Length: 358
Image: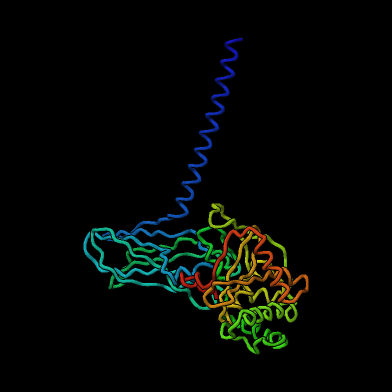
C-alpha cells in the first residue's frame, strides 16, 4: 500500500514536470517564432562579396507612409568584400515601392546600409484593400554592372484597412485621419449650409479658430456632424475597439475603412466615424483628438488653439437623429462618466511623423 502511494506520487510528479517542460517548450517556440518574424535573414553573394539581407516577412501597409516620413529602416543589408570594391545596392518591394539605390565602398569589415523605399505612386495604397503577396527585391552589383547578389524574398503586404491595435502603434490610428481627401473637402462644403442656418453669432463660413469664440468653434463641428446626419444619412454600425490603452500588452487586429469609403457606404463603426469627423475638423484647422474608452471611440475637439479646453462629439448619435449640439452635450457627459483609457491628439501624432494614409 505504501509502495502504491509512492508510485502514484511519482507518476503525478512526472506529469507536473512534463507539463512544465511542455510549457517552457511552447513558450520557447513562441519566442523563437517571434525572433524569426522580426529577423528574417537571407545571405549569399559571389566572391569576393558577401551579403546578408534582413527584412520583415509581413508589413502593415497602412503604417508604411509613416515609416517613410520618419525614416524607419525596414530593410537592412549587411555587406563585406575580401578585397575592396565599390558596390551599388538597390532594394524595393515589387508593385508597391520604388527601387532605392545607394553606392557603398565594401571592405573586409562588415557594414550595414538601411532602406525604406518610397511608395511607387499615390494610388498604390488606395488600391490595396486586400492582402498582397509580393517580394522584396535586393540587387548588389559593381560599377561595371557585374551582379554579385540577387534576392527576391517573399513579403506579405497587409491590406491598408488593417490596424494592429497595440500600445506601440497607438498614434498610427491617425493615419486614417485624411483631411486633404477631396471627399472631406466636399463634406465641409456641405456643412457650411448647416452652419449658416444656425442662429447668430454663428460664423458664416468654416473659419477654424479665426471665429474667435468657444461657441463658434462648437458651431462648426455641430455643422459637420449635421451634414453627416442630414446630407449623407450616415448610420453607426456597432463594433468594439479592441484596444486596452497604453498599458495593454495584448495585440488585436481590426479592419478600418478610410473616411472616403465611409462616406461612400454611408455607414461606419465608431472609430471609422470618429476618424471621418476628425478629418473634417483638421481640414478646417481645428485640433482634434480620438478618445478611447473600453470598446469605443469618440471625437474630442479643442475649442481654443492652445488645446486647453476640449468639447466632445460621439458619432453613435447619428442613429438617434439628434442635432450636432445635442450630440455634443451627450458626449461631454460621456467623457465625464466613462473610464478614459487613451486620448490620441492628432497634431501630436502629426508632429511625430504620422501623416494621412492618402
